[in-house]
Length: 550
Image 1 (tube, rainbow, N blue to C red):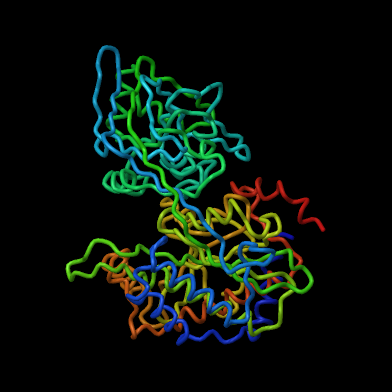
Image 2: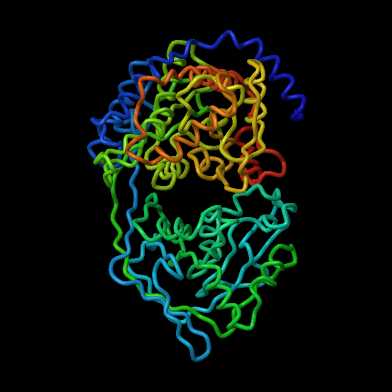
């Protein structure tokens, strides 16, 4: 069905069903956030006493809502939990880094010229001498765009030097959506692709504009403890060395190889680009890695479908926050995470109650509370890599993260930019109550890849994360923007992200009514929404089409 025709049909359906939504209670939303963000829950850090209280609370609420356990099979019965083993990786001792060019040996310092992550490929040490450097442009393999940056190159035993963002970020127009970042532009993709290409390591060239943050952020985010899911074959996802390099340091190495960094960058923005070796330039690296496994849990509940129980619609949100950390100026060291993401879990629980009260849907509806989002979307990554319900027959995923606890807005948005039927359906549902869609104004920042829907999206499952609108009914854009900026500047990832008795939760309650309606539409339908034909996630979804043909 064409997008426009689909939207028309859906708009009629949305209008007809607007009255069918069970009551979403703002008071219960407030109460759940108050509980989850209380000091008793100790900031909900994974693998802490706070986790035990959190996952038990969520499971009890799901049970009270009339839902069934939807997690791992234990002795033939589903439990409320999916066990999530997480790898914890930390560099121990010195990081010895030297570039070599001709007779020169150039020492680099960890966090200064390079920011090197603890190896996550399972190795206890990273040791290599004089590994050659190869510039691979933007490091993209995109068959649907007929684009490859690896023409005729074998990266075995070599370090790939790669640019951040997409080939058309600087020109603003081209095969990758202009300023809007595709997944090919994200640093996680660069690391994954270089591992697939067999490189010994990846050096991502840092530039502030295309990265969307400065070197200080890169340094702080990459030189501390790293986490990943426990993978069966970690070397397929992680090369031994994963690092960023300062732009001017990289440009100097290019110069020593007789190359012009800016000229090659321009070449890399074209389809004809071929990899270029930095002749005579190499890098040595030596450091030890401590790897441990810690245990955490996703919480999963299900409202079983009547006629197509093997087909699933998923609602999700992350339960974790930062736990107990450094004290703020007032001496408070519990990072309560009321908005981030007490709101998303309160939303998940309230949607569970709504489905528990309503007649059973045709397809199953799954409620997934994931761990370790703050450590890199790891609970959702683990679920997507080890799905309890097959991804091929997962209709879609609706994720909720850091929703506004204030009054209703005249608009809504999603995290990042994406083109998919699910978004058309959501727009239609909101339009039925006179709420408009505002596309993400910062598509170059890649927010689509920074929330828990994304591990599912990259495996082809249609998915998005709802973001609250800023054009408030009371106070307009000025009030909405001011509240968002105050939160970001004063409370985001601070101990002050605490529950406030003055929050009305009426906007969230209204928006959850829309999300209920969308999920219900999907759960009563036989349709399979998809990505747009030019989406980077369309190809992988279509590969499993035969499993949805019945």
